[in-house]
Amino acid sequence: MESEDMESDIMALLVDLHRRQDRQGPGGDAQTRTAMDLAGLWSQTGLRVADIGCGTGASAFVLAELPDVSITAVDLFDDFLTELTMRARKRGLSDRLRTVAADMTDLPFSDEEFDVLWSEGAIYSMGFEAGVKSWRRFLKPGGVLAVSEITWLTRERPESLEEYWIGEYPEIDTAAAKMAILEKHGYAPIGYFTLPRECWIDAYFGPLANEFGRFLGRHEGNAAAESVVAAERAEIELFQTYGEFYSYGFYIARRTDAIMSS
Image (cartoon, rainbow, N blue to C red):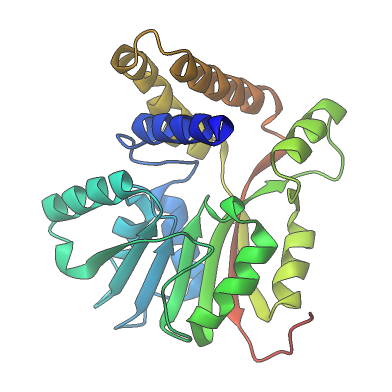
């Protein structure tokens, strides 16, 4: 029970650190639009989109640029959804967005409810293969799945880096391996690209580092808060040192009627 309480405290601290950020992971508005281009969304109207692991709404607000779109923004954390709702109101987007507080492993949706499933930097929470497999039923036939996922950029990489990421996320792999998983579970890949360095440094790490002082001030003397910041600093340093070997890959695929493997 003590371990569970500690994990809960750390998660609450992480939410507090990230809730004031535009992004809760690497990404960029231009990259979201590129994925929308590859998915062929701009020419369609009346799309129903679920943004899974939406955070405070960075990708949802870009998706809201689509004509006559309806977006369901899903996140586990109410604080993120509260922030998203406030930002949507300020942008005049409240009529295009609704929020749902839910665990991505147990989504409260009907089969074939959505034309598009979107998830930037969040599917790792349940694992790439488990996510694309379990979410498929919520897509209409021919619907689009678009997710960004941590991906090796090279065939070989430093052993220490590989050990770190295998420890953090055993499903990290190359784009070819991720494409094979999509095909295995009834998707036809239609687009792929990697996030550039600025999506990490300028859009995510920089603003996050600027928040460290205020965050520690809110939790003065809290050893857990100090450990959270130390872990974030280590992640920043890791990418600055080894960013040529990994990034987020953006995968765009269409649901097919292909028979899925078990």
